[in-house]
Image (tube, one colour):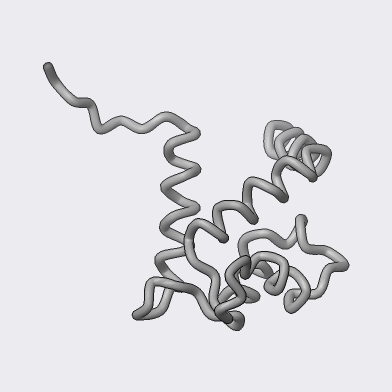
Length: 98
């Protein structure tokens, strides 16, 4: 039985999300508020328009420890994707027409 290392598009997207988190996590394996806000501005600008980074941070930091761990980060991405399907559809349409 051979094990292929070829990833599906969805697996690639999840792996990329994990790599974004890992690139900003500290020695404690968590992301601080400043790095979190930087990731929001760089990686999720269309989802965060008109929203305060501090407000989003507080809503994502579920255990209120002042950091975002990967589980919390993944929940943020999933929540924003499910709540903003219209934005995703527009982004995909724009990408396909380019």
